[in-house]
View (tube, one colour):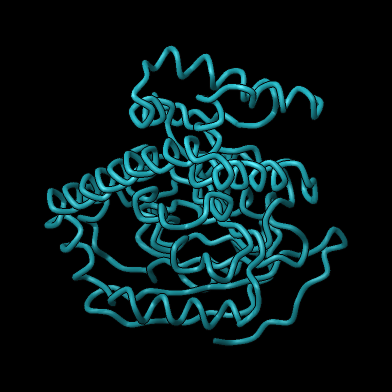
Length: 326
């Protein structure tokens, strides 16, 4: 699409309001209809025009279709320029500014509803979450250890595999240029969206997908995090292979999971496929996938020991980074 096509697509009051909203955050088409007070079929027609013009992007998540402002190619100035144009238009046009302010009030109501939904979900499942957490160490020491082992520098493009409620994505977003949270559960992604809604729309993305078949191109990410997810994998080697595929050479991986244990009830009660991993297992999993394990740390809890393993993606020549202990 040409620049003229983009301007034509914007030449409608409703589409201008939609784009002004999308600059702030990703929204479901139904949510946009709720904010604008228009029917979903009518909003869908406007959405199609914006997408056809390359101004917006659709993404399906289960039965929902989400819309976000098009990011554009790396370094392409048009998306940022259009965002500035919309901001300037709001400053210059009092009527447009009033509509945008009203839309934001409706949007705030949607955000509040998301947060309330998340809180209700946790309240309904509190006993289940607490019974598992009581078996191992609290989140704080694990997060501190993980942050230290990843070093002080930028994490670049970060993929959080099995993002769940989005806690890790939120924690490491300040150190990343962009965070992508992936989860197979639509419910979990809604919880993550509620947690991450305060972040700029261009800072994060939530994607529904399977950790055994990541929906990303090769060498897309600088850092991959697999936090308390690998024990759900029937084939953890496939998960690590996929993580390696999407990690650039020299990029980092961090896996947080349990050391070997004998709590068989976790298989049925919490759907664990693996009862922890030994250092030898993880070293082989890393090596077979194309990573060099360079650090490990054990964090003793109540009954389960949490382990953190980090590594570096080998280059195409198989060059390995020196190992260090954590």
